Structures are given as C-alpha cells and as structure tokens.
Image (cartoon, rainbow, N blue to C red; front, side, top):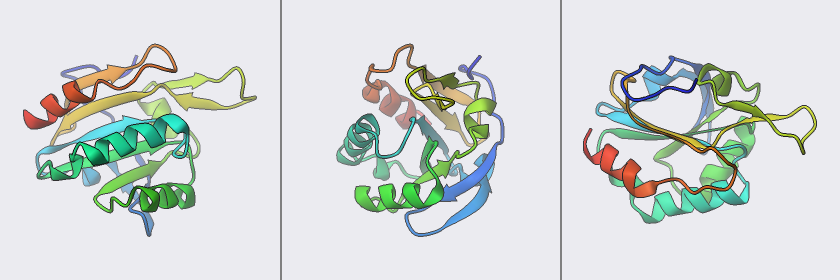
Length: 159
C-alpha cells in the first residue's frame, strides 16, 4: 500500500536530475530543510506531466522556501534533464526511476495493459516533512484525474 499520512517514506536512491547533470542521490539528501513534495508521473513528456508541471511553474512552487520540488518518472536521466530544461525551472529536480525501483518502494507501480511489459507509478503526490514523514498524500485511482494542486499547496504552506 502506498505511504499514507504519518508514515515515513522509504529512503530510496536513484539518479537525481537537475536539468544539466544527474547523480545517484537518496531521497533524504534531496529533501529541503522544511521538507519536499514528491510528484510521481509515468513519463516526463507525457501530456499529463507537461500539463501538471507547467501548472506548478505558474503556481510559483519554486517560491516555497526550503522545500524541494521533486518529480519521479520512468524516463532516463537524459530525458528528465531535457524535460527540466523545457520547464525552464532549475530549482525543480527529477528522480530517474528507469528500473521502477522507486515506484516499487512506494508501492505505486501498476502494469499498463496497453504497454507490453511496462509498469508506471500511479499518479501521486506526497508532501513530506524534513524527516520524510508524510504530511499529505494523494494517489489517483484512475489514469485521468488531476492532482489536487490547492490541497498540496496548503500542505506545503503548513510545513
């Protein structure tokens, strides 16, 4: 079952992309002094991911002081870096979950019937405090629901 409020998210490790480079990084090393939001999408350049992340840019998520804005998707680090350059948001970072280990550690992987032998994480968002304890959790139960952006922002403000 995916992490819920009050639980501590596993300290996974994966390549963390910043738009130019990538380095193997643990989640705890990527979390800001106040906390983080971790947003999981299937693939960086999917229409849904493009829509969501542009909304986050317009909403000013980069202005949450000492809060890391972290994405997770199944793309490799070169695609992740290209996506971050497309967003023009150097303060956002993405974990490249190429092998699905991050999605598996969060118990979010789902097989995609129309994509042979491919699994992606359920679209989700977790607001974490500095110790990786979940303060807010959202996991979509379908593939088309939008993220509750305002609820996430309220949880980020409360960190």
